[in-house]
Image (cartoon, rainbow, N blue to C red):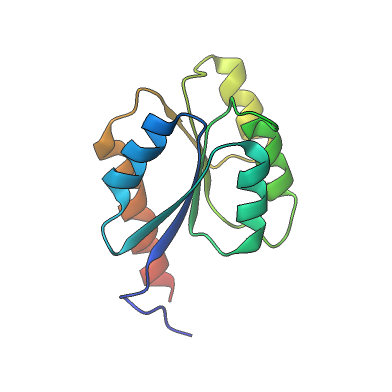
Length: 133
């Protein structure tokens, strides 16, 4: 089944800081990209399992359930394991990156991040998705 070029690219952003949620949403949402936000780990987990996403951006430090735990759960579930999941966090120590990678994270974006970095990631994944259809 071919992917419709007009179909939105769905991103789940799990971030507890309202300012960062709004910044990322406004930066990436452009009609072709749809950003759904969750404010804590449990909400993010429920959303990730409730509908298909093309990318998940996840903070590490989250209320109720931390991002590394959510990542581990999603990557161990066959229905969500194939979704690219990038940690978006200020936790920049080598051990933080290693624990996220061990949990199955596909990448690690450090805060403060550059908007161009996020937009390039989304564009790369959208291009890959279109090419595979």
